[in-house]
Image 1 (tube, helix red, strand yellow):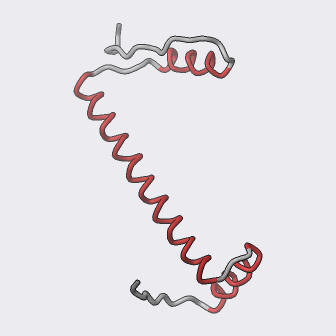
Image 2: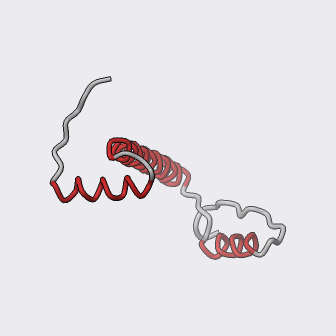
Length: 94
C-alpha cells in the first residue's frame, strides 16, 4: 500500500481527533472512511447523471413521456396502498 501525505491545519486535526474519539475510532481510520465515503458519493452521483443522460436521450429519440398529472396520480395512489397500473409513456398532445 502506498503512502499519501495530506496537510491539515491544526484546527482540522483537532476536530478530526475529537470526532474520531467520539466515534470510537482513530483519526487515521476516520480520515480513510471519510475519503472512501466521499469517493462513493462521487461515483453514485456520476452513475445518477449517466442514467439521467441516457433517459433524456431516449426521450429525445422517442418523444414519449408521462404527463405530470398521470405520474402524480400514480404516485399518490401507490402511497395510499391502492393497486395501480403504471402510467404509459406517450407523445405529448395525445
